[in-house]
Every structure is written in structure tokens, then in C-alpha cells.
Length: 189
Image (cartoon, rainbow, N blue to C red; front, side, top):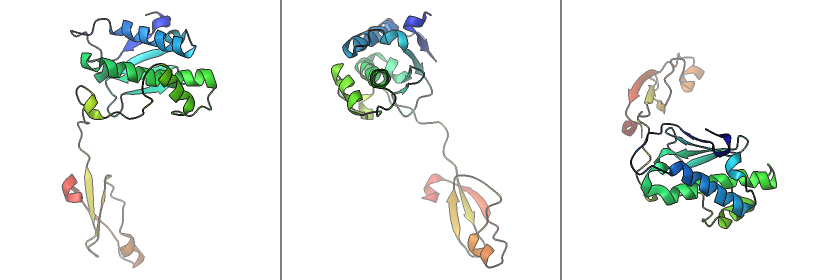
């Protein structure tokens, strides 16, 4: 792929309704660049979709001039949201190119760029707006109960360690050794 229109597809498989998506991204970057006085913006940026993004729709790496977008934005029902997220992240890079590295991430310069592109300058989006939900991680968080049999105190940690000791028992000269057991999330609450 040529450098001038660098778009990488991580975890991308061709599906119906996806034709023309790379072209739309390049055209959008050209449009944003023209509005912001950076006609070569699309040649300076690389855009990739990530299957690993779980909590956000996009992120900009300003020093690398790269944008990473959530895979859910590839869905046809999220076209408008894709444009807005792309604008949001491209504005971060453009703000630095135009105003230097001391610019605040969502400061007035960034807000002005997003408004020039015709989008609201917002930093949060209601999850209901996204077609399809951002899947939760598959692993369940483990909690361990540390119980001191000498003083009947207990505490909960997310890390299992055999070297933890009861501070109250240690200060009174006892061993302070805990009995560690795995508990469910509700039992720890």
C-alpha cells in the first residue's frame, strides 16, 4: 500500500456493505485537511482498525501521526459515528501540527478544528449510539479473601500472594499468616 493513503486493516475481513470504506476514510481526511489548512493531512496520517479496542472508539498517537479506530466503526450502521470519531482523532494530530506540542488534548484549538469540520466537539458518546455494543472482556476478575484465624479479620484483594500477613497480629508478636481463598465478585462486595 502506498504511503500517501496508508490504511491498515487489523483483523479486517471483507464483508458485505464494506466496499469503499478505505476510500471514504481517505476522502474524509482530505476534507478535514482542507478545512483545517492542512491539505496533505491524509498523507501524514495512518489509520488502522483494531480488534483489541474495548473501551473507546478511537485513539490518536500524535507523535506517530497515527489513528487507531474501534472495529465496531466498520459496521455500515456506524458510518456517521466513524466520520465523527475520525474527525475527533485527526483533530488531535492537526492541533499539534498547527499549534505545537503544548496544545491541550481537548482544548480550544482542538474544539475549533472539530467545529470547522462540522462535528460537535464532544469527548464522550452514549454507548446506545453505537450500533452493536463494545464487548466486555471475556475474563472475570478474580477476588481473594485473606482471613486471619487469630483475630478473625479479613480483607479482599485481586492478587493472590502467600507473603501477606495480618498487621495487627504481627505487631502483637503472632505469625499473622492469612488463609487465602478465592471468592466470587458478589461475595466480596
